[in-house]
Amino acid sequence: MGFANLVNRQIVKGLIFFSLEVLYIIFMVKKGTGLIGGLYTLGTRKQGWVTKPGSLLPVLQQGDNSMLFLLYGIATLVITGVFVLLYFVNLSSARKALSYRLKGKRQNSFIKDVKELADEKFHVSMMTLPVLGVLFITVLPIIFMILIAFTNYDREHQVPGNLFRWVGLTNFKNLLGGNSILSGTFSHVLGWTLVWAAIATFSCYFLGIIVALMINKKGIRFKAVWRSILVTTIAIPQFISLLIMQNMFNYYGPINELLVSMGFGRVDFLTNNAMNARIVVLVVNLWIGIPYTMLITSGILMNVPAELYESAKIDGASAVQIFFKITLPYVLFVTAPYLITQFIGNLNNFNVIFLLTGGAPTTTEYYQAGKTDLLVTWLYKLTVNNYDYCLASTIGIFSFVVCAVISLLTYHRTSSYKKEEEFQ
Image (cartoon, rainbow, N blue to C red):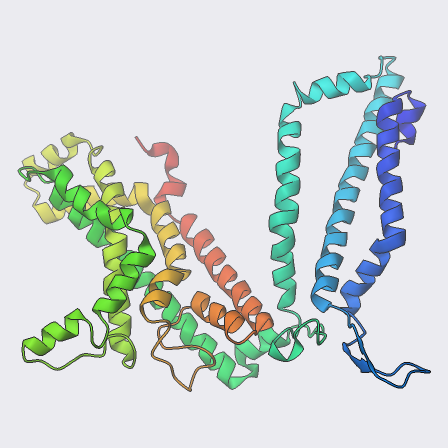
């Protein structure tokens, strides 16, 4: 690298490319090759007590750390990818230098190239560090967590005391039918996750629209006061609201005490009755979700052309007809992307489930999951409580696939996407 630049008297640029190539070769010779080999083996030496020749007492032999082998191997591949990109940049620079030479033009000096980075190519200067940051801080950890799904990294293979190995698609097979308990748990949790996301999203959405319509209706006084009261639930940190709700629905909480004082029995809202627990989390989610939809819809309703309503009333349309023929289509057109975002957010809604029920009620039919657990809370339990990192990573991949497929399929079928240019 850099030879063409040196030939064309671009000395500084040529030396920079050459130095980068030398540094990469030195890195690969000293460390890189071994790190890539470690990515394949994930370590070969297990930690344990060994007796060395000529010694009477055993000594603790430090074993290989499979997690570091995996991480450093991925980092080496990322560095190699960056080097390949620089190689193509070098080829582009060489091609440009040759073109200038054949046309008899004067080659750009290094100072001129630097000035271009602050002028015509300023976007390159501004984006280089952020892209590298995203590559090593975001992309590399994501690749690391994805690859964990193809290993047996669990409670029995904790580093550095033990090594974990590549197992291919075993974890995926177990979730999809290879292991009856795991596959049964996965199917039930996935089913409840989709049901929860659908009900939680659409209930908050439509009730939020209704609340916004009520507040914006002519003749309603103190509109700002009603909006402020609802916005209070947004201002209060969500985990505080949820913990208060959890205490209110507790078996010995205020709601049950009120029921007892009225002559009724106590109701197990959260712990032992799956149907009760699911209804409670859906109801509490309304408390959290409705204000957001109300605020967004209020702004949209103020921009609906008044002529549409006046024309509909002249034609004899009822309030219900006006809502379904004018208001709802208009609001849905604008908020369809928001609705999809809320659905995906509810698929991964950790706080409501974890802080209210903790996934309860528990059952022996599920593996490390309860009747109200979502994929994200089940994933959390597998990592924090049971150290099943490989299984949790596999579930994370499935969760990503579900979210990505739903997002892409639904968004590309909405009027917001198809008729964006028609919006006035």
